[in-house]
Length: 566
Image (tube, rainbow, N blue to C red; front, side, top):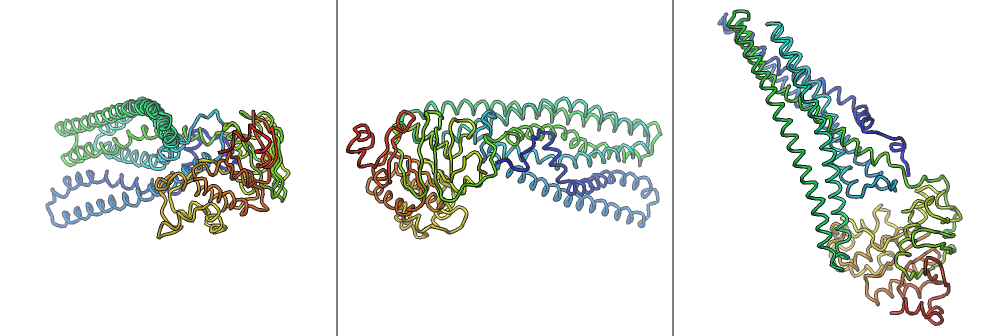
């Protein structure tokens, strides 16, 4: 469950360094091209000054033609260098953001430490917005360097006209950056808090979507919506704070840049009035004073983007550094597919012990629904094996000693609320595209009527979360997916709660027939499934209290009869 990329702790700074190192080639190319762009932009007012200084004095068509040609070369350089430089940087930025999204998503799909306190909605925000903002560092550094090139070239050109002009530009740039560096720290902190609050709001939305139906059932939807309104309002207020800080930063940067440009223009005018620089040099100085505002603006904004990237990288580090709930072992289960639960203590389970032999179909009738959920969580390895008492063995091997790949290959636990994904009926049944057991799974789960309803058959489009399917259709689709996987050990948790009694009876017979010779455990109170099982285990008070066939238990156990008879 650890991957090579996530095995080592990665603080935010290390994540940024990794992003820079992986894209060094594109960044060098982008820096050269963007530096050329800024140098050509700077050369434009310098060229104008030289034209005024020399061409207008000669008043010859040849000199004018050379000047126009020079300006054309400068403009072409500006256009092409910007086009190809930004293309290289944005391609690298997009690719790097994709890498981090995939890596964060991979970590989010693995069980992580509980003390991280990140829900699925928050991980989604980290994998999208934070990944994008972290990857922005790929563009920030080259743009920062190219803007510095423009400022240095402008300062050198002005120094050739008069040293005081060059020193004014350099001193003003240092002063502007010093002021803005202090302000950028607050932007980074505010942005990090905003991302956290937006993530909490996203997590609340995900929880509401999942639990909307039961919330309506007991009238808790208004309270839930009120809780979401609160976290959403907090996110809105923080977003306003961030916007206010960003606005103050941008306004201050613009004012300081304009003040420096004004100071350069006025100083150049005074020097020209005193006769210390020529008219051509004055034109150059005024042109550079106007031009320098753009690279200064870009240069002054870079600290803000660096802090935002750093804040996002720190949030990604929360996910990437989170240790897995369990460290997988190297072993694989023995062939045969036996399942053994030996003295498991977890939640409501108080020492549950039973064995499902290879090829056996066993049902567990849990009198307390919470106990069935706890048992399903243990078997699905949603609970770390080292955190509960007792052991679970698959194929004679302790589940904690198996690799996660081996567990997923040999043991499938299908939850009662299995997710339905946007796509088609076929892609939901066979996500890997293997094409195995699809027809048999559709028939066994009684999904045939759903397929027959639509002209596209298995290629009928399914909306996100199965919004265009009924509850029973979604449940049967989830069951078909579990059956099509054809694993050695299959655990089904309440697979027929949303279907009618007749359909339930047919599904029970079909599942027993399809899974004959394969190990199957069903956690259910359905009489049809209990009757189809080879034997039934009664789970009451956290322990197994009885074991027999369904019909024998009905005849001799009054409590069992009251619990499961319909």
